Image (cartoon, rainbow, N blue to C red; front, top):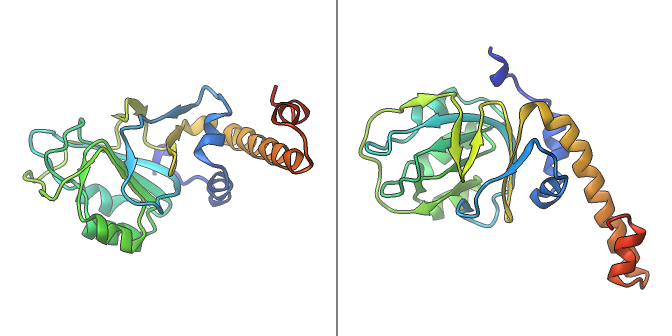
Length: 213
């Protein structure tokens, strides 16, 4: 197994799952990038954390990434680069059902998806650029396990993606341990601010006392 497909410790992923995308972005770590706001959750229960497995599709002949999904491991997130083509859906209820059974944690694409009601009922986290009922017309994937660009952001296989209702952030694989520590510090600081506000401090004073300014 290549390093890019080596699993990241489940405990690390669980730690990240306790940190919002906002907290992770607030670490200001150079290994953290935020996907464009054009990439949106298709339903409200789309929180996920997972290791990236990528696939690039030919936008002139889109196809559902079946081969990639069949190779995807537990705790991974499928990232599909459709080159911003949204005329045809490349993901739907059936792929979400298969992904859930395998233990895949989510899917992110700059393309379109369909079967939103079915995906929501399954509870599978999906982020996309658009929604359309039209299915794909192609029959193959272009490239697997390569760097892709989704939401104006380069994403490599083996990176870690975190998503929630605020959006999606990507963490470079080599930066994960440091980002986890920094994000937990951000979360703790925010809790301190909340506690100080509950004690009657002004917002400015709470920020100062908690070390945010």
